[in-house]
Image (cartoon, rainbow, N blue to C red):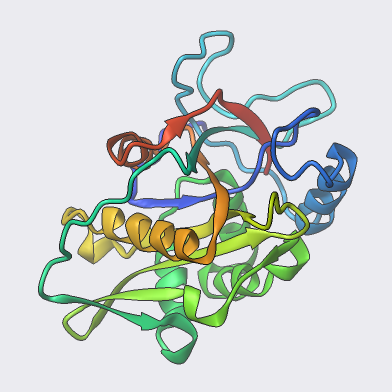
Length: 248
């Protein structure tokens, strides 16, 4: 049965696979599709109901084209040099630790994946279980053509509890004028700590990290049924782009 999943302060991001794309022009559409196929071919597709803002050509949900039973809709956003960064102070009871220095890292990722509305995450958790899906996700970055520095990946702490994680990365071979193109590979707040606006802290932390590194654009997308994340991008001043389909 198709059903609408509960929204979460969580998202997973990847670039749209379209010809003539304005970013990452060194990577062909065919090469990107081949990489996605290798990464996902051993999973069965799981349908997810989703709303596509500004798009009325189909009903909500996974869009099943002839011969393709495993695509879903994503809503993309971008951050460029024309945007300004927030300098709002974080709550006094919050702090940051390098994710891979903390033994709770995999467990925090697993908690987020277990309730994710993203069709790809649902598929992976169904096939592997949440802990193994988390390990798979963390190890997948080089295979997807991303790079990062160890210190970029952070756990958000509320006092002594790990409340969320954020994984900023750059795209390989997508630099312009010495500046990288970047994305947030994954981020999320664990269920018990939701409702405090912590997703905003995660997004700002990743944005600041990547801007400090030097990027010409941060491209992100999120599942079309993830209303809280869509609203967060909008509230933070990111530019919303046309929705697109993506393989699960």
